[in-house]
Amino acid sequence: MYAVIRTGGKQYRVAPEDVIEVEKISGDEGAIVQFSDVLIVGGEGEPKVGAPTLTGASVAGQVVAQKRAPKILVFKKKRRKNYRRTHGHRQNLTQVRITEIMLDGKSLSKAKAAAKPAAKKEEKKPAAKAEAKKPAAKTAAAKKPTAKAAATKKPAAKPAAKAKKPAAKAKDK
Image (cartoon, rainbow, N blue to C red; front, side, top):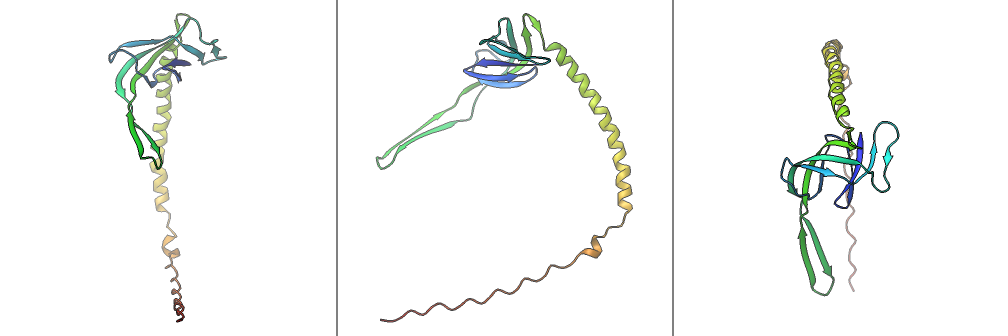
């Protein structure tokens, strides 16, 4: 399940449990924010597209942190005119963790969020079995003799550098 939201003049593709950085939104850490400008909601089947926004759709998120972006230097110069100006800018940002996607008052993200951890646990079990088999394969490979000792040769010596020609003599006038 995903949604495309608009905030701060930009569009973001979000899914449950995503952490995004958007332009500053008022609210302390831990506060819940609602994004009502939802452009697209997709997932299973055809995505629902708004014109320009979907009515009744919203995305909820929790403020993780209020922070600032790295400084951007703006430098202006006009050559040969002794004109130089340096100006810096740091954008205020809000880090938001998306908690749920709602369409017509129904949460679409809770069922998907519960299904993801169960799928992750199943993936870990086969990996543990594969690791148990790997040490047996390494011991069989260790018994084989290596052919590297017989094949090692010393590198060929480089040819001596050619002697440089003497510099041309200057003519006297």
